[in-house]
Length: 279
Ligand code: GLY
Image (cartoon, rainbow, N blue to C red):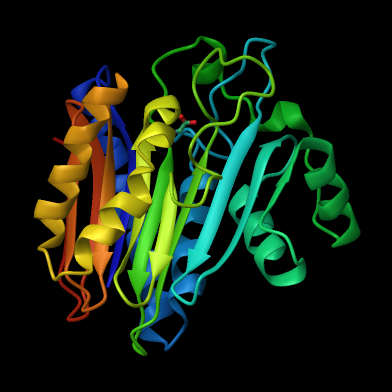
């Protein structure tokens, strides 16, 4: 089972939201193809998020929101249900930050690299750099409402869970600002004994309520994932923010919730059935 989101937001026009819903389904199918062949949940979520990072309509990879200096500065993380995690923050000129986050998890003893340290790590591992200008779209330049952070959660045939999240952050953010996305327990969390979660929305609020870990913890008692997602999403209001999340439990049941008007998303289940939505 794989579930993906293309971000929560208020201001998207219907046409844009419908297009984002389609983009989410393409990504979910890419992740599901990996699972069908016996690939791991980690392979699946990274494949799905890579598709979303490459799709310029989303606020991740190419199409990322610009910071106050007019630059793209991205955050991403991955986590597997055996409690391994990797993340990067404030990286520039990297086409697929989710893949760099995976490398941090697999090739370093650390969890999170930021800015120049992340760039040095990327160079040391042969990760290609792209012209930072190539990640900037006309839409981002015009500061139109960006369609939001992207993410995926999956359960593979062996019952392993994984989650991944990637973002350009908030439009006009101060350079160096880091949101919830690369922070394990905030934007992303996975534990094979409970569930996996990827979040979207105002990072400053998500961090304060440690949204992803709070959601996964509610699954430990067998709570329905939709009920758990709704309960934790409601806590964002106390931190004066909005957002949403996708959630999968150890049995492969999934749920989602958002406090914004819209959140584009799609899923493909183990029997090949699929769905998508935005409102
Ligand atoms: N949730 C993405 C961010 O605030 O950076």
